[in-house]
Each structure stands twice: as structure tokens, then as C-alpha cells.
Image: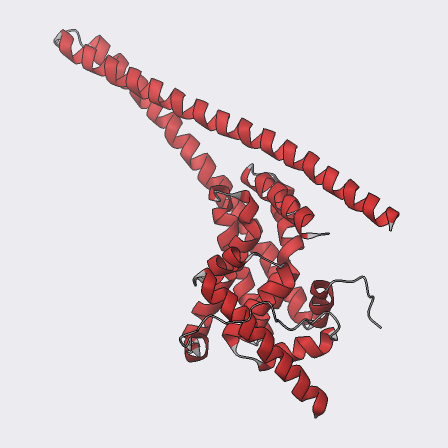
Length: 130
Length: 185
């Protein structure tokens, strides 16, 4: 006997019952696949961080070595200095924009969480008033 | 949960996924696994293939969700990925002919006079859906399951909105005919 309050969506979804064994297999494989993917993403994150650290260290070493070799003309120091400065400023701007975008997303997420709560309460009230 | 609440909920989960909250993606999977599986199974007419397609969908979604521009569209975005993967699968199974047999579709004259399925048994509907044409089955599943707006269904299956309207119209007619025939027999 079908529940008259149940939507067509729910009733249709209940009609499709996959074989439990296949479903269990799928769930297991999907979970393992997502865990693998999460590890891959984490590794990728560490890899990018390591590359950044290496670039910074190399830049510093290069600047130090260039500074010690006093026989070079002043133009070389200036070029190295300006390049490093540009890299630093570019990196900082990039970092700030990432932080700002993240902060904006956090705020939107919190607002949506509140909206969702209100919608749920409204629907609860509607159900009570019926 | 009504359509608006579902949309707000989707957006909230998608935002959490974009922020990299570990539980959010698992929640998204739990939330949409069943309807996406139903949709894939209806397209492919094979549970095993539907499970394979769904796995590919989750992998694609996991990799791309942080770049999703509009979190409100996460549901139709996932349906679009499922549609594309299922069609690829059908193509590779060399039964693409069925999926691509899109004849020139004229705009129906009487869109208002559409059959309703509220009183129909879910089991009869579920079975009748399998007996209608794939392109009609697809739009009806999206229409019945998610009540997606015409524009979003058009985005999912990659056809103009006018075509979706006419497909829904003809699909409802075809489904009604199937149900009537089944009742008579």
C-alpha cells in the first residue's frame, strides 16, 4: 500500500532495488576509489608546497651567491633584486586572493546553512498546521 | 524535502565540498546516489553498467567540484556528468543508435493538455518507463525525479529548451499510452 503523502519521486526510487551484492561491491569500490583520490590530492598538495619551498630556497641562495661575487656589475644585483621582489609580490597577491575567496565562500556557506535551517523550520511549521 | 529546500541543501553541501570539508563529499554521495543510480539504470537498462558509470561520475565530481562555478547547480551538474558517461558507455557498447535516434521534433501545439501521473502506481510507471523510447525516458526520469526546470534539463542532456519541452510532452503521451495498453492487456 503506498503512502498518499509520498511523492512520485520517492515512490519511483523505491521501485529500483539493485542486487544487494552488486550494491555492496559498488559501495566498497567507490569508497576505496575516493580514499585513493583523497590521498592523491593530498600528495599533490604536499608536492606543490615542496616545489614552492624549493623555489624560495633556491631564490635566496641565488641572491646570496650573487651578492658575494663582488666582481659583477651593479646591474646584475638590481635585476636579481627586482625579479625576487616581483616574485614575492606576485606570490603574496595570489595568496591574499586565495584567502579572500575562501573567506567569501565560508560566509556564503554559513548564510546557506542558516537559510536551510529556516526552510526546514518553515516546512515543519507547515506540516504542523496541516 | 521540497524543491526549494533541496536546492538550498544542495548549495550548502556543494559549498562545503568546495571548501574541502572531508564529510561533505560523502554526504553528497549519500544524498544523490539513489536518484543518479536510478537515472543511469534507466538510460543503460543494466544495473552493472549503471554502477560502473556512477563510479566514474563520483571520480569526475570529486576532481572537479572545487572548480564548480555555481554551487546551486550541483544536482544538474551531476546529472549532466551521468548523462555524458552513460552516453559514452552506450556508444562504446555500439547501441548508440538507440540514443541518437533523435528525429526532427516539432513543437507540440497543446502543451497545457498534458496527462498527469499522480494517480498511477509507481510500479506500473517504473515498468512503463522501460518500454518507451530512450530520449523520452530520459527527460521523464529527470522531470519525475528532480522536477528540474526545463533549462536545467536542457543543460543536462545537451539540447535546446524547446526540444526538452516537446520531448516531455510526447514522452508523457507515450507513457500514458503504454500504461493504458498495459491496463487493457
